[in-house]
Amino acid sequence: MKKPATIRDVAREADVSVAVVSRVLNDGTGPVAPLTRAKVVEVIERLGYQPRAAARELQHRGAPTIGLVLADLVNPFFARLADRVVWEARARGVHVVLLTTQEDPHLEAESIDNLIGRSVSSVIATPTGGNIDKWSRLLELGISVVFVDREIEELPQIDVVSISNDASSEVTTQHLIDLGHEAIAFISGPLTTSTGRDRVAGFRRTMTAAGLEVRDDLVRAIPFRGDAGRDAVASLLALPIPPTALIIGNTAQVPSALHALKQADALVPDDLSVIVFDDNPWTELVSPPLSAIRQPIDMLALHSVELAVGRAKGNLPEAPRRIHVDAEFILRSSTAALSPAVRGL
Image (cartoon, rainbow, N blue to C red):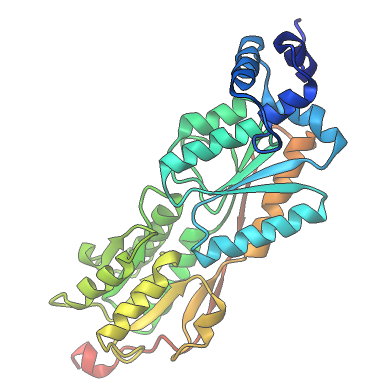
């Protein structure tokens, strides 16, 4: 059986030093002339040299590196997740290369290509839902992947760490039903993401189980970026029969949605009971303090890093791991029982 090409094989064939090959594989670590770079890349492709092999060879002299691909650092959830992943990685002597996709599949594809060139040993990512061929390419190169917060159904061979999104929606929806609400609105993220689909599914399932109608005009799937939350809330309040309760299951759009409520002079919880995903430090400081789903970001980071490092070291069974952690429902003052006047009594 033919042995896989090594970094020294590439250097010899390209007539350059191992250090030059390393700089080509780890873009930004040193200058390489364009013609030399092109020559090295050609040899890498011809010999079938895999960057994962480079990771094994080069990283024995230093700390291994994990690629972290997150959707949007403007979103406080992902900013906190990035902080915890870096903390967990450093505690294990692992470096982190952080890239953000801004919820753009094209930027995500570029980020994946970038990480292949950097010879990372593993990748932790929140996928946009596309680029299946790109994620598969990482696996073909021997680079392990861990999806955190989201997953892609077409890639069941990839490890997943997420919260139980459907269960979280069930808890919040049931709480509002128990308070007498029937016209409950739900704002989710795009249904192209697993979080959006799962949260809406949990909401619909709970409403149906309670014998309540799920009004399609009260369910809004909106983008994570921009001010779509403001528009969604404004349109919900303008309905002939507006909701009496609202669950904002799109974490990134919570501030925009709340701004729309303020502009409309909607009183919470007198006019509208409100529950939000996720629990930020400010959610208990506003008036009234907001009931929220608190996502266990520390546990998401811990499990993700453990899987990424374990895969890189070959310490885990081949079967993919699926780890779901429970979120916590924090009850505050933004929900209330439906008043008799609103009930029509």
